[in-house]
Length: 181
Image 1 (tube, one colour):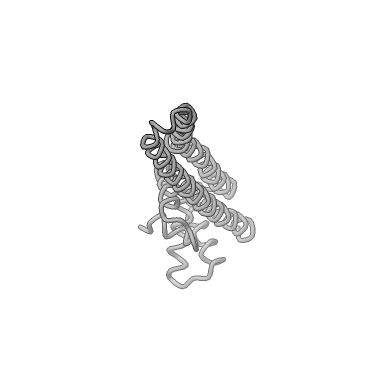
Image 2 (cartoon, rainbow, N blue to C red; image 1 turned 60 degrees about the vertical axis):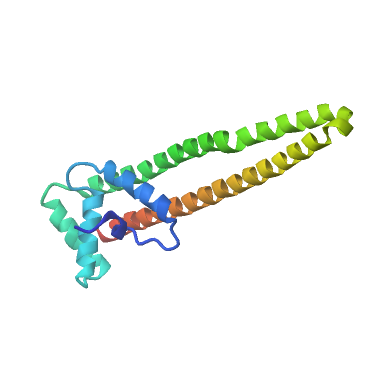
């Protein structure tokens, strides 16, 4: 059987995001012969040196014998597109939760430390050593916050790029289905 990843040969896809999205497709694969099975059949035929149009037509002819209509095929392709979009919402929620844990908590820590610094400025002579420690803590917390924000931004960009590439691939398949079937 052709692995799901081989069905969508995406250039410059973030590996983690692609695995997440393809895992969602596999976990939510509809029973019976639908878009995913059709795509596997078409790719298998193309690997046997059939041109794309012939591979699509042959795969559809086979699928039609088990009751798959063009409408059901397009419906299931749209189902998987919607599933990928739903994964984005879940990803956004997880990203926001992580941002709350990692970024916002550090921002609160920074604010707390700055407040302490302000209270101690009046006693600066006696508290000079303590003030230096807080300033160092702020620098580390800010560096950690900036680092985490950058990681989150890269994760967001990589996910969005991969999601868009996957959606384009499915849309191209839908156009091919319309064109060839």
